[in-house]
Image 1 (cartoon, rainbow, N blue to C red):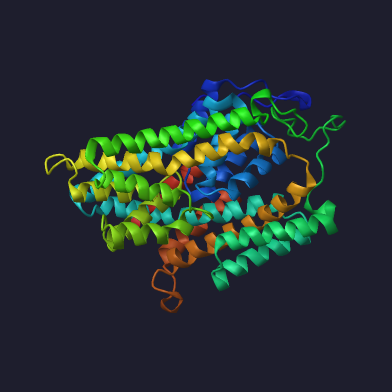
Image 2 (image 1 turned 90 degrees about the vertical axis):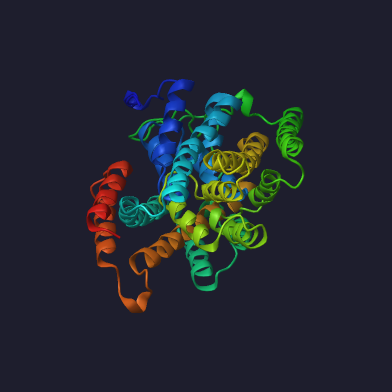
Amino acid sequence: MASPRPPAADGASPSAVSLSEALRFWWKLGWIGFGGPAGQIALMHGELVERRRWISEKRFLHALNYCMLLPGPEAQQLATYLGWLLHRTWGGILAGVLFVLPSLFILVALAWLYMAHGDAPAVAGFFYGIKPAVTAIVAQAAVRIGSRTLRNGWRGAIALGAFVALFAFDVPFPAIVASAAVLGYAGGRMRPSAFGAPVAAAPVPEEVPAQGRALIDDDTPVPAHARFSWRRAGRVLLVGAGLWLLAIGGLWAAFGADAVLVRMAWFFTKAALMTFGGAYAVLPYVHQGAVEHFQWITPAQMMDGLALGETTPGPLIMVVSFVAFVGGWARAIFGPDALPLAGATAAAVVTFFTFLPSFVFILLGGPFIESTRGNLRLAAPLAGISAAVVGVIANLAVFFALHVFWPQGLHAGPDVRALLIGLVAAVALMRWRVGVVPVILAAGLAGLAMGP
C-alpha cells in the first residue's frame, strides 16, 4: 500500500481521501487485524485518528459506541460505519467486505490443511508464538483506549465495575451494557461534565492541537448522505430483507428445505442476531447448535477452530466459517470427490448470512447516530458504555493471559517460553512503538523456533 500523505501543516485538515486509497487501507487492515476486536479497533484508531487524521477522536468514539450496542462484530461494523461516512453507501459496504475477506481466505486455507493433512507442526509452532503476542496486543488496546476514555473517576469506576462483573461473577455482557448505559444516563444528569457535553458546532478553536485537524473533525457538518430520512431507512430495510430472502430462497430451491446449507443459513442468521458482546457471547450458542444439535463438527474440532480464529486476522466470529467448512466437508454436500469445494461453499454461505445483518444495522442506524452527536441525553449513556468497554477489554486481556501463560492452570506454574514472548511483544508494542505486523511475525518465528 502506498504511504499516506504527510500531515497537513499549520493545523489544516488533510486533503480529501479518494475511494481507492480508502479501499487499499481497508484491504490492508483485513490482513493485519490481529488481536480480536480490541486489537482491530486500536489499529483503526492509531491509523485513522492519530496518523492519517481522517476522523477526529470524538467522532470515532461516537461511532464505536453505536457499534458496541449492536449484535455482531463491532470492529467490522466500525470499519463499515467509517467507510460509509467517508464514501457513502458503497464506501461502507466495500470497507466491511474488505475487512472480512482476508480472514475468510486464510481460515478456508487453514481449514483445508486441517482437514486434508491433519496436524502441521510448523503451523502449530507459529501459532504458539502468536498467542502471547495477541495477548500483548489486547493489553495494549486496553491501555490506549482507556487512557482516552477514562478521563475521570466516574468513568474509571464503571470500567472497574465491568471488569469485576465479568471476571469474578461472569455477568452476561448485555447486562453490563445496560447497566453502564443507566449509570451513564444518571451520571450525565448529576455530573454532565464527566459524561460528555454538547459538541460546539460553530467556532473553530483558535489553537488547533499539535496533530492538526481531521478530515472529519468534531465540528464538521454531517454530510448529506449521512442525514436521516424515513424514505432511506425503508429502502435499506427492503434491500437487506430482499437479499436475505433471495439468498436463502435460492439455497432452498437448489438443495431442498432440509439441506445442510439451508440449515446453516438459518442457524447462523439467528446467531448473528445474538452476538451482543462479541464472538465470545455467541460461542456457547454456536457450540450447542453446531456440535450438539446438528453435529456438523466435533467438540475437539470446535476448540481447534477457536484457536485458529484467535490467532488469525479478522473478527473472531469468523470462527463460524471454520465450523461451516468442516461441516460441509464432513457432510460431503457435493459428494465424496468434491470435499474442498463443499467446505469452501459452506464457509462462504455462512459468512454471508453472519455479516449481512451488520451491514443493515450500520446503513440503517448510522444517519440517526450521526444526528445525535452532542446530545447529552444520548451521549451520557454511550459514554458510560465506552467506559465499560475498557473493563471488558481488560478482562479479555486477563482471560488470554491466564490461558496462554498458564495453560495447565495457576497451580502448575507459567509457560516460561510463552511468557517471555509475551513480555517482549508488550515492550515492543508499548515502549518501542513497533508495528503490529512485525511483532506478530517475530513472535510467530520465535514460537516456530521454540516449538509448542
